[in-house]
Amino acid sequence: MNVKIESSKIIKPLYDGIPPSTTTHIPFNVFDNVTFDTLMALIYAYRPPTPPTSTIEAGLRKTLSIYREWAGRIGEDEHGNRGVFLNDEGVRFIKASVDASLDEVLPLKPSPSMLSLHPSLKDVVELIQVQVTRFTCGSVVVGFTGHHMIADGHAASNFFVAWGQACRGMEITPLPMNDRAIFRPRDPPLVEYNHVGAEFVSKLVNNELVKVNDNDNDEKKEKNIIVHKVHFTLEFLGKLKAHASFMNGKAKTYSTFESLIAHLWRVITKSRDLNALQNTQIRISVDGRRRIIPRVPDEFFGNLVLWAFPTSKVKDLLDEPLHYATKIIHDAITKVDDKYFKSFIDFANDEKVMTRQDLIPSANMKEDSLSPNLEVDSWLRFPFYDLDFGTGCPFVFMPSYYPIEGMMFLVPSFIGDGSIDAFIPLYEHNLTNFKKICYSLDLKAK
Image 1 (cartoon, rainbow, N blue to C red):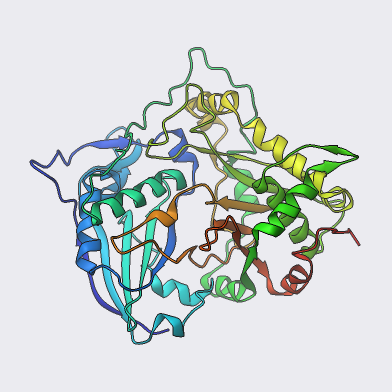
Image 2 (image 1 turned 30 degrees about the vertical axis):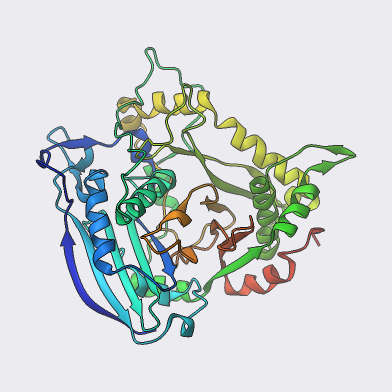
C-alpha cells in the first residue's frame, strides 16, 4: 500500500464570536499524571459515499473550540506544574491518497503497513493529528492520533461523537465537563491501600528492570512479534460466560468481559510455555466515573482510570478451571472502588512521599514485551463507532499497529451483534500454539 501525502498543515479552533484567552494553563491532575505519557493511534474506515475532506476539517475545527485542550500544548507553568496550555496552537491535518481501491488492501490487519494510515507518533508536539486518506473507489480511511494525558478512552469517545455532530451541522451535546481540579485530597488524608507496585514504581527499581535497546534491536524484536486478530462470536462468548460462571454445582454469573479476559489469560499463558511456579498478572483499566461517590459525570473530560492487577501462579491458572481465573479477575476489579480511588488521590497528592520514594508511574509503553504479564485495553463500552461525518458510521474501527507482546486491545466487532475482536501481540513462535487452543473451552495444563 503506497500512501501519498498530498498536504500537511496546522488547523486551529473555529470560534463563534470572540475567541477566549490563549494564556491559560490547566495543570494535570493525579490521574493525568499517572497514565501513559504517549500518543495513541486509531484507524477508521468508511465506504462511499463519503463527505468532502473540507467537511471533516471544518467539523474538527468547530469541535476544537469546545474541546480546547486538544488544540493546546503540554508544558510546565511557572511553578513547575505540568499541564496543558490552552494556546490554540492547533492540530495537524494531513490529506493523503492511495492509487488503489480499499478492497485491494482489505482486510486491514494490524501490521507495519497500518502506520502509513496515520501521522507519526514520534517527536510530535501536536496533541491531535488527523490523516484523511482517500482511495480510488471513494472509500476513506481516517487515522487519528491523540495524547493519552489529555483524555482517556471514555473522554476521547465523547470527543469523537461531538466531532461527528459538528460535521453534520448539529449542536454539540452534551458539552464536556472541563474541570481537572475536582479530585482533591481529603483532610486528613486516608491512604488505605498500597499504591507502590500498582500505579507507581520506584525509579530505581524501574531502571533495573528496563533494558535499554537501540533502534536496530527494537526493529529486530518487532519482526518477531505478530499482532493477531481474533474474532469471538456472540455464540462463543455465551458459551464461555456459562463455562466461567459454573463451579462445583453452583452458579456465579460473571460478565462477558471478565470471562473473555480469563480465557485469554489462560490461553496466552499456556501458549507462552511459562515456568509453572512463575507469577503472571494482568493490568486491567477501571473507569472511575461510576466508581467514585458522588458519581463523576460521564461528560468529564480528562483521565479517570486506575488499574486492577489480578495475579496467579501459572500452575494454578492452568490447572484450575476457567471459573478460578474469572473469579480472580472479578475480585481484583471489584476492589478498585470508591475507597480505592480516594486512597489513590490522597497518596498521589502527597508530594513529600512521592519525592522521598522517587516514584514514577508504572504505566509504560516503552517495553517490547510484557511476558509473563498481560495488559488489556477494552474499548467495548465506548461509542467509537458513532463517529459519523454525515454519510454514515465506519465499517472498520481498530487500533493501529502496536507490536508490544502481551498488550491486548478489545473492540466491538463492526458486525454490531455483540461479538468482539481481540488484537493480541505474541511472539511468532508462541502464535502457532495460541491459534490451536484459542477457541478451546476445556484448556488443560498439559
